[in-house]
Amino acid sequence: MKIMNFDHVSINVNDINKSLDFYSRILGLKQQQTVDCGEFDITYFSLPSGSRLELFDYHGKNRSVPREESEVGLRHIAFQVEDVASHEKHLSAEGVEITLSTCDLPNLGVRVLLFLDPNGVTLEFCEKL
Image 1 (cartoon, one colour):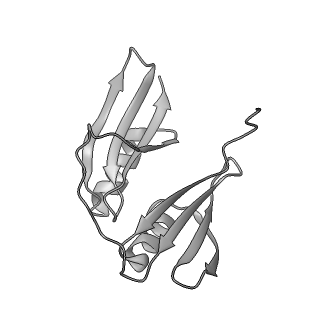
Image 2 (cartoon, rainbow, N blue to C red):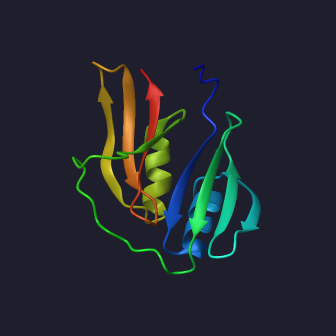
Image 3 (cartoon, helix red, strand yellow):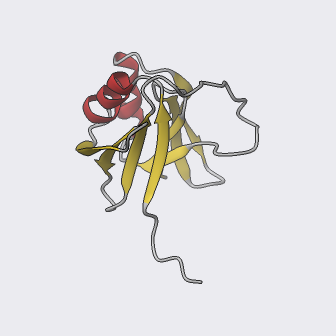
């Protein structure tokens, strides 16, 4: 087996309009096509690496179940950026919930910021120290 590259990540959304605004206007990702799959739609966003972000909209039928940070499963999705602190200011001005303010993790060699998307998914911005 040979894994060649990371292709995409998918997020189930509870409000497609808030999610589209968040990922396009606030985060600045380029929205691609939306595909009607019958019981759900998938909206694609391109990521700089050539991979994609997929938003799954079940038209209000999906449940939102709060999760603790330490529960098994997906913890967060991280994006490499420049100047994490300036991104925190932008996100705060947009009313985005910050769960970990900009801080350095010298043992990992990174500066990080954690925040939530409109669906409660934890996202991370990180930059190398």
